Length: 253
Image (cartoon, rainbow, N blue to C red; front, side):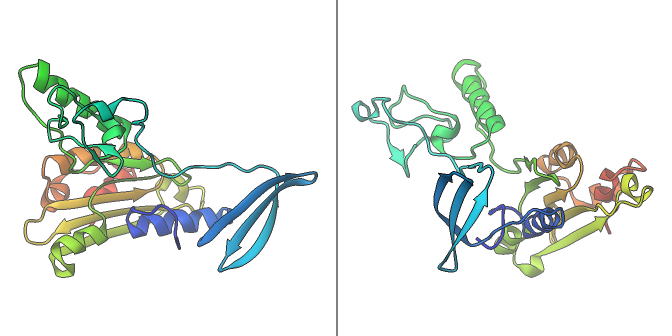
């Protein structure tokens, strides 16, 4: 890929990647690893860049695997009517499989692979089956964070997703990039990025994105607003806490 963090809003991807590069991290995009071998002088990492082979001598190699694969081996599913979809257990909105007395929640269903989502699915299942309160899990506006440096967090639609759904003329993007007062006073050149995506016709806030200190803590609160159907007018009518970076979400015009 050309950029890190596939699936996130493009501004988020650009901001984190450029900040990492500015901090001295070399990010090699569109690069495939051919092999890794331990040598007497270090670790030889052989990579392919545009078809050309290059060698990097490293002290340490840390491998981060992307994505998850549902662990359904040795469950005996072949002895049931449970159906699979793309390697995951297929369930309906109540987490019921094709076998009426077999249920599944969490990563094994390969929906949204996040721990809080699996917990919420389990609670919805328990309420429905044992609590006398039939309900389903909603997968709209699930907040998530990337604990990189700088930190990023997001909830709702990305700009590209909003355009695909409503068209370029159907949305309005509010974007702010600034130095928080915490960094302004000591004259440190560290900036925060905040972004709101709004549906023009209904004024609903479709997405909120942030890169900067405490992004996860701030977006968690913003996620409540999106979950309850807040409009840009609701954001504008909210008094900001000054001086805080978070107040920028309610002062963007």
